Amino acid sequence: MDRETRLKRLHFRAHHRGVKEADLLVGGFFDAHAERWSEAEILLFEELMEEQDVDIMAWAMAIEPAPERYAGTLMEAMQLLNYVHIPR
Image (cartoon, rainbow, N blue to C red; front, side, top):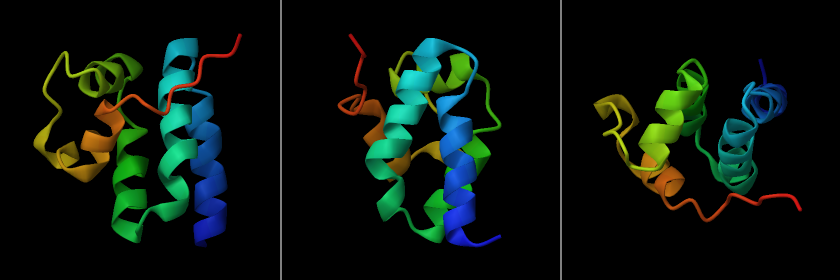
C-alpha cells in the first residue's frame, strides 16, 4: 500500500476511535504530525492504533508509563497535548 493510502486509512482510524475524547486526542495528534512522519513512525502509529483507547489516553496524559516500544519522539510529542482542539 502506498504512503498516501496508508495515511488516509490511518486518518480515518485516528478520528473514529469510538470515544469522543480519544477521537480528539488521537485524531488531533494525527492531524498535527502525520505529514512529517517517516516510514518507521507510520509503522509505529499503525501499531499504536491497535491499542485500547484508555491505554493510549493514559500514556498521552502520562498517567501510566507508555510501553517501551512507544517511548521516544512519537510519545513525547503525544504527551505535549498541544494538538487537541476541542470544538465549541
